[in-house]
Image (cartoon, rainbow, N blue to C red):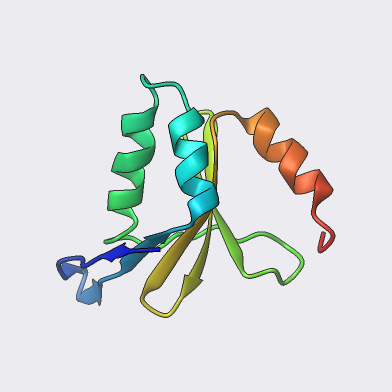
Length: 104
């Protein structure tokens, strides 16, 4: 997966700069999402370059979840890299995926 270089941004004296990597599975998810909602997901991923995800899943999986309206972005934060693993258009899709995970 290819990443994009972020410009550093200073917020309250702390600089966060991330490179966003998008998995092949997330790319497929994005193409399957309704065209009217797709820009919201892209905009949120750009936002993650400057503000790291804050809500992590339980169970020690090291995965973070970002809310995008009714949808969800599941990603892994490793240092200054954010790997987007899956995108879900609705909470129901995310919930079904979460229930099937063996680590919960």
